[in-house]
Amino acid sequence: MTSLTGMTQVGRLCCILLLLLLTGTMATAEDKKLQDITVLLDWFPNADHVPLYAAQQKGIFAKHGLDIDFLPPSDPSAPLKLVAAGKYALAVNYQPSVTIARSQGLPVKSIGVLVEHPLNTISFLKASGIKTPADLKGKTIGYAVAPLDVVLFETIAREAGLGKDDYELINIGFNITPSLLSGKVHAVIGAYWNYEINELALEGHPAGYFPLEKHGVPDFYELVVISNDTFLQNEPETAKQFIMAIAEGLAYAKKNPEDALAAYFEANPDARKELDAKAFQATLPVFANRQEQSLAKWQDFAAYALQNGLIDKPVEASELFQNLLSR
Picture (spheres, rainbow, N blue to C red):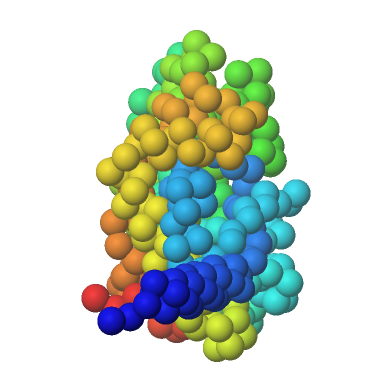
């Protein structure tokens, strides 16, 4: 028979081995650090970014080995340039901007989708009496971004039978809502139907709008995730994990909209809660359902950009994007 002393020694040895095993496991977990990445936003945090912050706050990025920090730009044109220069690896941007940049030789491309369809519109106060694009004749139109907004507006005006002498275009920058409310302009291009339209309604000024894709402009991805060629070549797995996390964040936001919005507000306590809640609810149907980008969609906009002078030379649509997730 084994002595009591022998039993005690065996028990002690087992405890020591168990403690060493647990300590080693804990040390391994602690040693496995997340990869820090700063992602540039396209603009200040808003309802369009709810799935991103939900992925951040709910640990979805961490699950994919990433510690993500979102950084709003001081200048909306800066993120694409900074990613192209390799200063940052990832940013939220726009399909038209990627198309223009790539045609100019900048090494950027889209690797994921946040919002599948245009949010940009021609917007106006309902009190203006404007009901169709033809009613823009004789009106002053404000635009936010040149030359893109100018080309988009001219397309819609042309479809409505208007010539360039039938309206006046003025640059209002991003003073969209104030310019409409002050009467400085009769309509604007650059207002988002999910954001400024709700903002105007909350201020007691119901507004109408013309969706671009229903009036002569090809459908395009409003918000995409961009990266640069060097990062995609050197760190393809990191890029893939990021897009996988984006896909999960989008799915989470669609399935749990209230929780996703709460996570966004937790990360952005100074957000305009009533406006962002309305804007997020409006945006839910156009958040991306998958991360497989359409070649035809990129081809159509690239052809439109060339035909309308947004780009000076043809660009291969296959060079504008990269699908990182296989079915």
